[in-house]
Length: 118
Image (tube, rainbow, N blue to C red; front, top):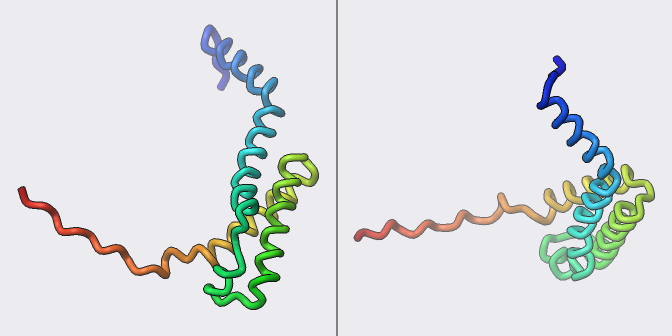
């Protein structure tokens, strides 16, 4: 179904703007995603101490591998070198980190304070 009249002109105008900004918006999105990985890699997370607490085998090596993988994802996304592979590596990293290190379901539930009576 095609629209005709004034509204179709507005849509075609916004489509042209989006098409012109496509590359810039893709780069901005890649840089924002890479910045999340940069924050954790730059501040040394995951560190060997935390991985030892979680029971990882070879926590020092695991920490080095994790930080290296994060930097590979960052470089891939920011420089646009193999971005699909970098994105897939980033997804795999997040899934593995969530399953093994961010086990929120293993923490005891917080106790709720009783309601105040007024």
